[in-house]
Length: 219
Ligand code: 5RP
Image (cartoon, rainbow, N blue to C red; front, top):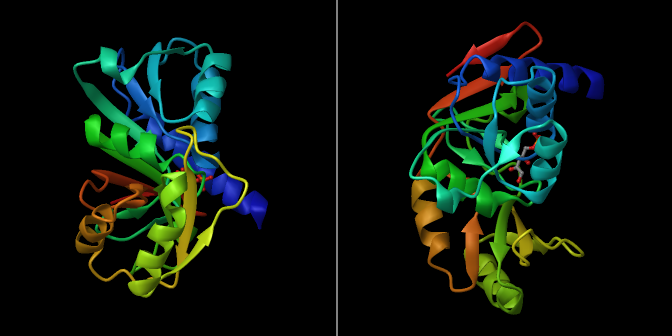
């Protein structure tokens, strides 16, 4: 089962190579699917020389693959961002943050002219919300934000022991049936103490590559 999932992730990661313009600086996401992409980049020296990374974990892997990293502040534009997701709907709206890198991921998605999301078909859902929605919070506001989420019908669970690359904490919100993702993202963004909501609906992916047993679907 896990081998099958890995085969789909590897397949979709390889398909993403075809979306990468030569000589461009590329934003690279975080997670096991992206790790297959970094592996593929490592096997093709010179394919990309420079990248912007969404996490310390991906930065370490990219450096080991011989890719130089640049700070987003030193760029005036980012042509492409490639990342995975925890859940995706047919409108290319996503839940992200299972790996806890949602804030930097959202920054890169927002900075990029084009956002290509790579998932295996187990991540597809008609309605988002089966996967608990990760929300990065300022530590002192964790309980305050949790109460606000409970009042909205969610069941927030503190990802205890986990600290994000930005020094913050994560609440994973269970039980949300997300029928209007942009509206919910807007609403949750307003809660004081929330750093980033793991809903990527106001800035969805531009292209969804879906790894299946047979091949890769584009949406
Ligand atoms: C990390 C993320 C990842 O993109 C998401 O968790 C998917 O990971 P994987 O490719 O391991 O399934 O949002 O913060």
